[in-house]
Length: 332
Ligand code: MN
Image 1 (cartoon, helix red, strand yellow):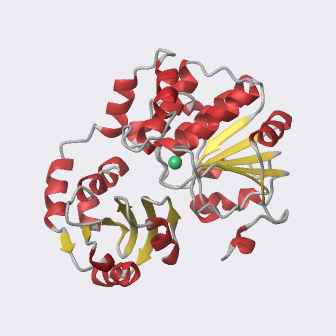
Image 2 (cartoon, helix red, strand yellow; image 1 turned 180 degrees about the vertical axis):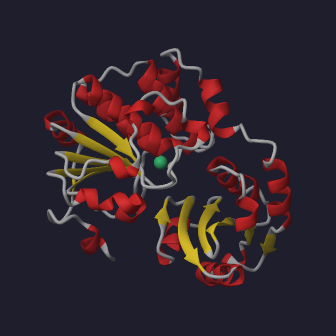
């Protein structure tokens, strides 16, 4: 484990409860909220909801993520985006840095150094692979989304979850649950509560998950044509994978590239699905999904990444054949 190396200069991280997190937030005089690189709607929705709550209390607050330079199209209508600042404009020193939905310091990219210069650091997350890299860590591995953790925190803090906050939180909930496929007791009750504020839940969902430019269709044709089934992999449970090569990504947004795994993982003959996404020539971010029997966060962890039991990822470097071979060796 590399937990020690990843904790802040302030000392080893400790797990805290909601009440301690509320104390930290209510005492903070200035806050930076950091989302993970290649932000999804859970990290950004959670980050913006928290920033809106702080802004309404009169606390100076910035929200940011290290990469990419611009916000993905599908998230530009989230309330609170005016509190977003480009990575190079994030304050060097601040009273409290809060990270949301970010399982390791590495997922902060070039903004990880802001943890070292903050008076306090608070990590709010639900990844089972979370490395406790903050001084204070509010981690709920049972939560379906970081947005659900934020909701409980707001309730204890006395924050009014109005339509704007509900919009942000619903964005995280609907994406992390795969449009309410992966739920637990309480998930639908939370959704109902958020929808009851008057948000356009269908419109939010469509914009985040069901909207792509026409070029997505020929891209899918090329990428899905590359899919391979390896029945003997994963101890005979089967692996299916596809490659999104660098040339396939031209003109495509993150939403288009991230959508591929949701098609590949439907393969009946494979317990584990993988999509290799070549962000830069020879540099791949790899998505892993499993159905029920395999813990892909452990596989991703062996390859330097992390995530959840049924959804995880890691970064790989090299030629396509080599990165595929590396995964085949790791899944057994
Ligand atoms: Mn999440």
